[in-house]
Amino acid sequence: MIFLSLPEKFLIYLFSSIFAVLALASGILIFFFIKRKDIVEVAHKPAISRNIKRKIQKTQTKEISNKYKEKLGEKVVQYMIEVANSSDEKLVRDRIERIKKECERLNSLNLPAETKEIISTVLLWTKKFNVHRHLREMKLLKKSTQIRYDHNKKDFKLLIPGE
Image (cartoon, rainbow, N blue to C red; front, side):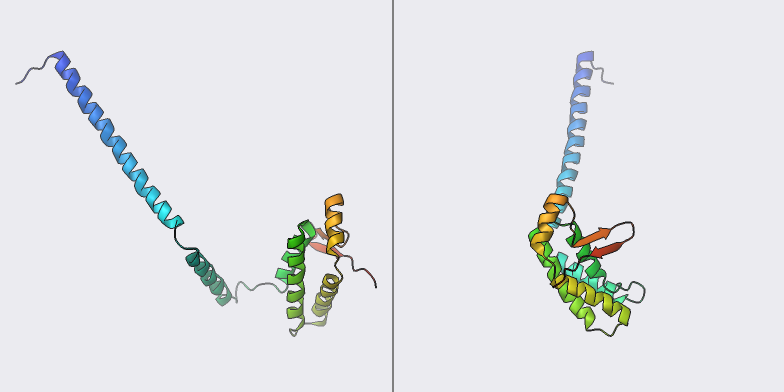
């Protein structure tokens, strides 16, 4: 049996505890760097793969159209909500053009007379929409007289100026 003095025991415990702490810290650091490398690799993947993934998801939702069918004119409603709440000129002009195109597309479909009447009204409204007036009213009054959207009723009020 080896008998060690008190200072020798203290040094042995000190060095062994320092070694244990260093081993634990190095293990944590190695784990952190491995995880960080995985995150960096994911961030540096090309954006094309994300776009392809989105396209695949869109086609999958179109294939399941029996259960999850897009409501007729849903895009138009979203665009109109954006116009009603926006005071950005580029966004308003873009959304008005998109509404026109979508209404013209819907107008060419074989739909009931009531629906066609609503579509033609929205199309007439987009043709007579004054962007500058809308922007001026949004800046001054924070609401437009040409379009108002009631969130509670989920209803639009459109002003179509006369000739």
